[in-house]
Image (tube, rainbow, N blue to C red; front, side):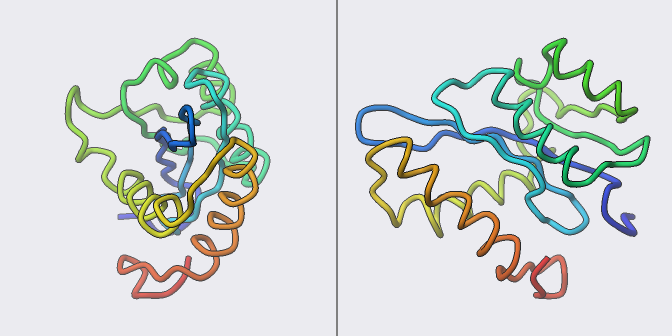
Length: 156
């Protein structure tokens, strides 16, 4: 049972279609508050992308030791560079069971919300379009205004 923030962080990646390609979003949520505490956008789905989200979360939260960091088994989260940062901050590392998306259901739900309430409503043409719109949705709409059933239908 979670009692406060910075006990469990969950991480995942998704793609966002633009006119002629895809861009990729990495996000880290605090499981207790459901707040997106770190994210990154890139035209490459690689370890640098996941590290961008992690560094933002670390800077914003300055977490205590023993926070659980949960992700899927993607190479972006299993890479030595990523694991080294988690170990430096004394995270407990947790990864989903092979082929089981339910282990990361909260962040999967975030991605569905993001796509339904933002991405599918806009016709992004370029990476710049995504860079302009997505931070607004994450910071001002999702983190500040969106109601969460798990939080008694209160924002964050």
